[in-house]
Length: 167
Image 1 (cartoon, rainbow, N blue to C red):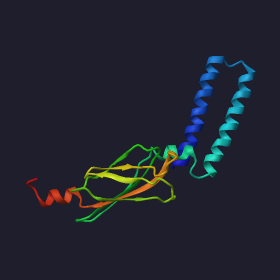
Image 2 (image 1 turned 90 degrees about the horizontal axis):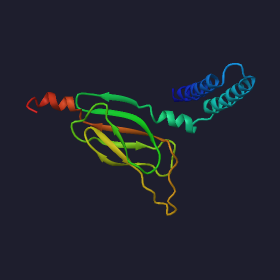
Image 3 (image 1 turned 30 degrees about the vertical axis):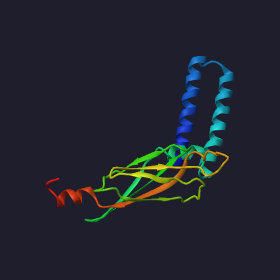
Image 4 (image 1 turned 135 degrees about the horizontal axis):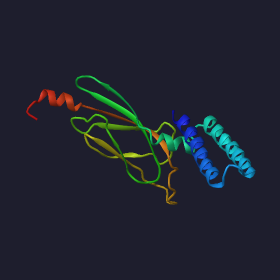
């Protein structure tokens, strides 16, 4: 899905910019047709790159804006998981789609084995905040848009509310 959206974004962005230039320059200019063909050839090569090379900047950029989420629940336990991407050293918060009764246990899966994997800085019943730190004395900033999976396990809020109607 992220690959399709990345390719669509690149193609539609190129078409929009070329269309604007075409309108501003006028339709009768032959030179513009050469620029248009060249731009779409470059865009086609970039689209093939996005399609066949996994984990490109463009794909990860789109992927970081898509929240994937799944849920497994019983009467006494709720397991939610999703993925997230972020770069740099800033904190990154993920709001749980369904709140927990109290702060759940949250795990991070570093499926690609990145250096500078995030850790759980703070967890509440509504969200988890991830942070990274650098042990490297060279102060190298981690690569942007690294993908991770989070899994939260705890007691569902609806279970707690049904058991204690006074709250």
